[in-house]
Image (cartoon, rainbow, N blue to C red; front, side, top):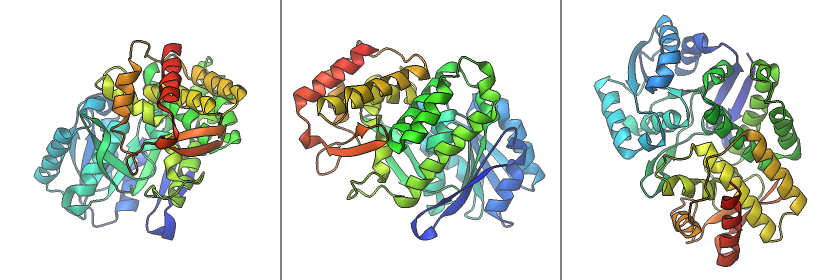
Amino acid sequence: MPRLQVRTRGRQHEYQIRIGRGILPEAGNIARGCFGKRTERIALISNPKVFSLYGSTVSKSLLSSGFSVSNWLIGDGERYKSVRTAERTLRFLNAARIERSDGVVALGGGVVGDLAGFAAAVYLRGVPFLQIPTTLLAQIDSSVGGKTGVNLPTGKNLIGCFHQPSAVILDVETLTTLPSRELVAGWCETIKQGSVGSRKLFKQTTDFLALLNSKSVLISSQLEDLIASHCAFKASIVAADEREDISRYDTRSRRILNFGHTIGHALEAVTNYRRFRHGEAVGHGILAAGELSKNLGLLDQSELELLSHAVRLCGPLPSARDLDESTVISAIAHDKKRTAGHVQWILLERIGRPRIVDGKEINDAVLRKSLRHALRKS
């Protein structure tokens, strides 16, 4: 079972990412190893769809390792990542008599992981939790790094905190049961990370995506290698900048991971989190950020074409043609990444070379032109 080590600065937090195929039955042993001998109770948080597929396997593994297990299922979809759901989850933890020596296990995609992690962070001022992400997007991104949170009606992740997991279990076999749109969403996130990470990671990603017409690629070792590369990149960023220091503008700032997210989050908000999966919205956001980078004179046309081709390799995105750019720009004003009253944009100078640009440096007409052009492409 390949293992990656995540270390934050000063090694205040250190944990392993376990990557493999068919490793969910090991969840109990891994949980016991990272939670310790004193842990008696586990709160297993999931959603009905994921729990019907993998809940029994994980529960049996936890029980066989000596834990008592209480299950809590939340609704499926971004709209359930809310303050109301978080409050209900906290009430569940209290009813299940979870103590500070006990643990929370998140089994599901990014919504489950973010919400379960947030509940674990604030309940009793913090209890340990284990991430078992079952979507591609969660495996390469949201499960690694300790960001947890819930949404407000005005924007995504406006309430949250940093709470590092005790371990992350990535069973790539879970990806074989995902619907195609969920895979597209995850592939878009791989393009985001490759674009800001390095030319090498970008090429590894696009080379893999070019093979997607072959069904065998999802059961090949290439997929595990790709996921490991993306997790290693994410872990390196977290190690350097765990809490996203707003004073940093270098290419290893954690803020670079927001490439495509400023517009992506706005698209989700203006469609009430019902039209786009998160990664699909990020796909549109990548195209818009690339267009804006070009129009600001940062990115060559040839690099933009590489970026656009990479997003197309991910698969079809829901159309955004009918969305008015003024409405989207108004939603951007609520972006949580604002500093001193301005949105902090993550743009590109070239593939593998991100740049943080203060919103005050971007002319409104250029922003509107870039956004309009990107949305009409879909």
